[in-house]
Amino acid sequence: MRILLGVGGGIAAYKSAELARALMEAGHTVQVIMTAAAQEFVRPLTFAALTNQKVITGMFSGPVDGDILSSAIEHIRVSQENDLLVVAPATADLLAKFAHGLADDFLSTVYLAFTGPVFLAPAMNNNMWSHPATQSNLEMLRLRGHHIIGPDSGPLACGTVGAGRMTEPEAIAAFVDARCDMRRDLDKETVLITAGPTQEPLDPVRYITNRSSGKMGYALAAAAAARGARVILVSGPVALPEPAGVELIPVRTANEMFRAVMDHLEPATIIVKSAAVADFHVADIPRQKLKKTAARFSIEFDPTVDILAEVGRRKGNRLLVGFAAETENLVEYARRKLETKNCDLVVGNLVGGQATGTGFEADDNEVVLVSRDGGITHLPFAPKRELADRIFDHILLLRPALHQAG
Image (cartoon, rainbow, N blue to C red):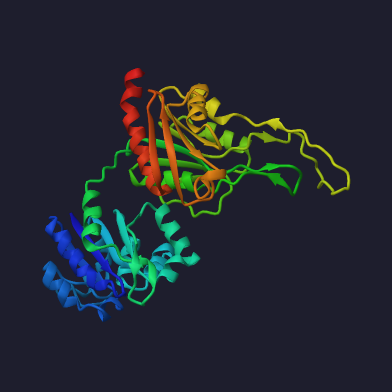
C-alpha cells in the first residue's frame, strides 16, 4: 500500500518517525506531509532519510520536476496516487479543519481531495481532548467513516495526566496494517436504513417523542457507505451531520417514515430499521394550541403504523434487520420481535436503569445480536461506529444462508 503520513504540530510528532519506520517494515511505501507547526518539532530531513521519499512541507514547496504548474496541483496528484491517509499526531487544530472542510495548508487540502480510507491518531492536552468542540468534531469525522485511533491515557508533556497521549507507533501501524485489506464488501448492495426518533404532534406546537439521538443509525449509514453500498437513510429529527455518501431523506412522523420506507423499498437489498418509531399518535390533532387549565384532561392515542412488520410482510428475498431497545428481558424480547416481524436479525440493547451510558443519546453501546438461525452474539461495549461495522460483518454472514433458503 502507498500511505500518506500527515504529521501535525505537537510534541508527539517525534513518535511519527517511528510510525513511518513501522509502516515501512510492514511493507508499505510512506510519503510524509508535515504542517508548518510539525516542522518546529521534527525536521523534514528526518522523514526524508527514513522513507527515501520527498517530504511535502507546504503548498508551494518548489516545482515538481521543474514544472511550476505541477507544483500548484500537487495536492491532487498526491491524493490520487496514494491508498491511505494516516494523520499522527492529529492535533485539535487538524481535527477542526478536517471536520469543517478548512483547507489552508497542504495537509488539509489533501484531506479534502483524498477519497480513500482515513486514519486519525489524536494527540493533545487532556482538557483540549475533552472539550465539547473537539468531541463534536470527532463525531463528524466518525460519521464520515474515518478510523479514530486512541488517544491513550497517561502523563502528558504539559505535566497533566489524562486522555490525550498519542497511541504508540507500533499499535497505530498494526491497526492500519490490519485494515489495509479492507474490502468494499457491500458494493453490490442497496442498504435502506431508518434512524432517529419520530415526533407525533399533540397540537400545532407540541409533540411526543423519545430519547433516540440517531447516532446508531447514522453510524450504520457511514459504515455501509464506507464499504461500498448505496445507502438510503430515512431519518427522523436529529442534531447530527449528514454522513458522507448517503442519500438522506428527512421525515418527522411515523407515517412520513412509513411512506418514505415504502417509496424506497424496491431497490433495497438490505433493510436496517434502527429508528425509534413512536408507538402511538393522536389521530385527531387539535387545530389550535391546547390551553393549560387547572383541571386534568386526557388525550386518546391510536397505534402508529408498524413499519417493521409491514416491511417484514413485503421483504421477499431482502435481508431485514430490526432493533429492540428494552429495559428488561433483552434476549427474550429481541427473539419475539425477530419472529413476529419476520426479521433475519434483531439488534437488542438495554436502555435506562443499569444501562446508563449506553443506548439512547450515548456515543458507545453494547448490544446482542439475535439471528433467525437461533444464534446469539454479544458485542461488547464499544463506539457505535465500531459496532456498526461488527453488525454489518454479521449481516454478511447471514446473506449466503438467506440466498440458500430462497
